[in-house]
Image (cartoon, rainbow, N blue to C red):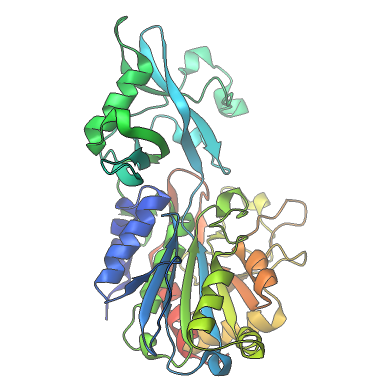
Length: 436
């Protein structure tokens, strides 16, 4: 049995290899290949076999992985774990390169809701994909990853910002977020210089490049910390820790023998509302479930019977109690790092949990010998949301919102507990093999 620290080391390696949502899906595909999964394409006809292992990718950064159950879906339903592949941060604008006083900068747009101050004074770089016209005249795309520090957002010295420690660091989003890249001579053109940089890294002729999707990421690798290495830190824990836990639960040999059809649905665009062709509020998951049903002759009422017997675990990280800021938490709902997965509850349905789904997840925790906690947000603070309410409403499937407790959510450097990650894998395996 793999130790908790080894499981987290694999998670850190996964995150370090996945600096953008497009790389996340590529990393997952690499892992699926080791378990003999077959890629399906939405433009082709599907022929599915009982016990078959399959996955579908939409627009390179959302992926749905499934194992066809031993029993028909109308008899056993779908067991789904949903999570998201994106994290808040910066994205490079189309005409990003500009030069001021000989310093080349790249302008950025804020993606989602990052803690902006945490991006200062970090070793930043770029990762994503380039769309280009290939030698055959077709539009193609290729991943690109600068694996060295390339960019920086230097802080202003305290001598010029005397109130920073009292007032906090405040960055003007249009003027003070461009990232420093290089110095240029008067003869060098900013856009041409940046295009040449992309060409050198990708091997694609700059004249063939038509567009790019580039995310800014932190090059510092993930690490353990604490007196007994009981914590770990990295970027993108929200929500790659949930994605990877779900994937590890599914790839267990015993789990993949399930009677039910098992699904991991990992979506891009959660951090910006999920409303896109590949987001949880789009058609991706309903399309795939319907295609599974049609490929197995589960039509009409039988498909709706399958949905009625289905269940979804919406897995997204949870807010751990931080003792330096006690007033940020409901005193009766402090969830602690390394005390087990968290069931997230909100009366206004910002989370999809309700009494029955909470009870089911609690029972799976008990069966798996895993501790669990319950979280409710302070009533006087706005509560975030997840893909849970969106997806369960769209499909009519009962759902519970859960996650591992973590510190500094939406910082460029987040922290969590080693033993919680292991516990989440264990309980989601239990979910996959248990009756609903």
